[in-house]
Length: 228
Image (cartoon, one colour):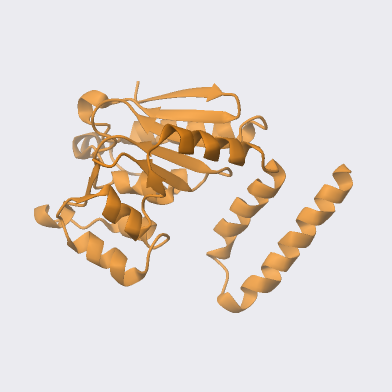
């Protein structure tokens, strides 16, 4: 089993469960995560999608052997799959994050990491470049900083990851519980509309953005009026 899923009240938990392979993801694992997110998106009782991992490593990136054996034709990026969530995503990082593991944390809405966690993009040392990770990083930080990160294979800690915007806060149970309670109290219709608009904004020219957002605000207001 590559992942485990469980709904706990309004929280849908997705656990990376390939501890023996350091939770390196495969095409099959990406499909399983996508199925979990689709299930969470479709469940009106779910307000938050929570990611965590079994074992000492949160995610070691792509399982290159599995991708070579299964092929990549038609397969989606893990980042693309996580970005498909219509609800806030929260990652609880208790172990190292390497290479493609950045796709998951960079696409999550909130990331909590233990102080001792290390992060590392080692691809350039072995003749590769983290192309997909670069795309995800550009949503989190300026282009120059994202490129610098991809060019530096040295590991860094939670404090630096927090300064870069990759980590929301140090992992603390009380802080996480407070955030989950806050998110579950929000209007789910409003949240879904916001996430969908955010995705569409990326395809719209800057000069058209405000008119687009005004239109979306009016649609949401009309929908709420109909429910009264």
